[in-house]
Structure formats: structure tokens, C-alpha cells
Length: 124
Image (cartoon, helix red, strand yellow):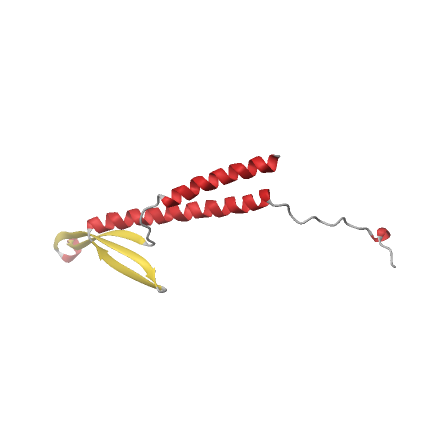
């Protein structure tokens, strides 16, 4: 009876995670970086000037690193999509773990043969 309760609890948790997947918004992989460029300064003998902020999105495309310059609005949208992707990956990892537990709780495993000792074996 214990396995049945455990299996039902696992199924409920799995269904909650599946509904979380359905509510996930856009998903993107990569990293958004905010950059500020500083030029001049005391070493150059001129007033320090700052340019930016500039936003860049870096990701892999066909095995190569790609960098795209973004507006602030694009950067916010892509950052949310990256966060969604991380949550999705965490949810999938949990669902995989629960699936493994469900299989173990729902299906009976292979029965092991009893061990025999050398004195129990007989030759026919």
C-alpha cells in the first residue's frame, strides 16, 4: 500500500510540474551582458568619457559563439526568455527525477535468485 501512496504523490507532483511547463513563456539560451565603454582619463591626459550602456546577447549557433547587439528593450525581453529557459531546465530535471521514482514505485523489479553456497550445489 505504501508504494501506491508514494506513486500517487509522485504523479501529483509531476502533473504540477507539467502545468508549469505549459505556462512558460518564450525561451532562449545565452547570456545578456551590459557594457559601458570608458575612453580617455588621466593616463591619456584628457577627460574621461563614458559611452553606453550597450547590451549584447551571446549564444551558440551551430557550435560557434555568436554575439548580437541589442537595444535596452530587446535586452529586457531576451533576459526574461533566458530566465524562462533556466526555469524550464530545472523543471525538466525534476520531472526526470520524478519519472525515475515513479518507475521504481509503480513497477516491480526483477526478482533476485537466492544465493547458493558451494555445499548446496549438486552435479547431475
